[in-house]
Length: 384
Ligand code: SF4
Ligand code: SF4
Picture 1 (spheres, rainbow, N blue to C red):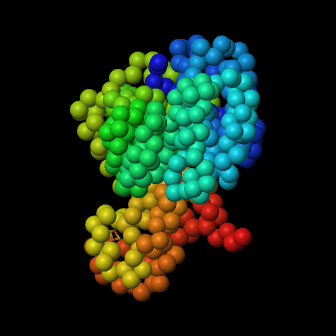
Picture 2 (cartoon, rainbow, N blue to C red):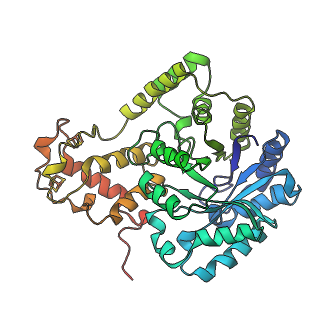
Picture 3 (cartoon, rainbow, N blue to C red):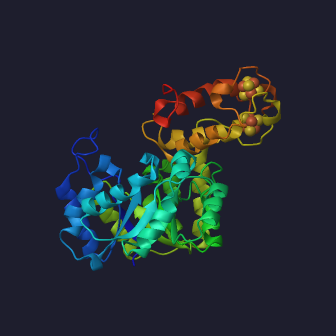
């Protein structure tokens, strides 16, 4: 199986504010090209495009081709499930929306602190394994944006999973909030093949700072997108890389890259390290993560961790306009009652003299609070 998957979460739309306004003719053309070039893996989810992505797949692929010619991945939206009885009807609806009799890769969608409430009341892992036994699912796995420890705990509790889907790209590889490298290593430790999501960090790695792009182009003429994909192909345990292409042209570019893709050599890995440094130099709060400020805080706020998350999200999602993996990491952090949130800062200023970077920490924490602690991330909502 070729390693590029067609991620159907950012399909072309006629109205940028309307997720359901998918341009079906363009999706048809994209799917035709994809299959014609020998690629076969499609990825969708119950919630993508407000429930319309699965139907777009049906029209573009399932209605036109025998199932033996492709693989479809779909996901159980545990964050939207309150009772165990809701899983079967959703699964049946998924089969119907997709226009298939079985799902090749079935994922428990976004297993993390965000979905804890659902995991308490239901057992979606068992449900997936049962569907596999019935032949309705070929492989069962889960996707997650949680940290490495959380993921390892889930794998230990559910050793019958066949694969895992993780956010990996060269910028998140050594990022403390996302922990791509550590999560990948956990997957390797338990022999779980990895499907990569967000290989371009939501498109951000296609538009890196000019200086960083120059380094890459001067070395071999290849685009930042090609470098980002080649980094992932260099990881032995990656079985699939999902491209969330939102136009025919983007998908075509990705296909051309994957038709003859090669891992990065040592010299190229070194260049990518410099690229990472340049990108990181463009970030919002100049915190080096030295931790000197930590012990001074009476509110036990993990200041560098929060600054790191803020920097990450400001690169990708300055609004913020969408629910990102970093936002999810902040939500997970908020659930750990032992640490203070940005909003718990009482402006005592005890931390300021400790900071070698002379950062006005309480002032910056207000920005962190304004960015993450919003209704978008489930904060400031009225209690029921
Ligand atoms: S100003 Fe805020 S972050 Fe700094 S020590 Fe006081 S409570 Fe903690
Ligand atoms: S002391 Fe300053 S640079 Fe060091 S972790 Fe705290 S905020 Fe960041």
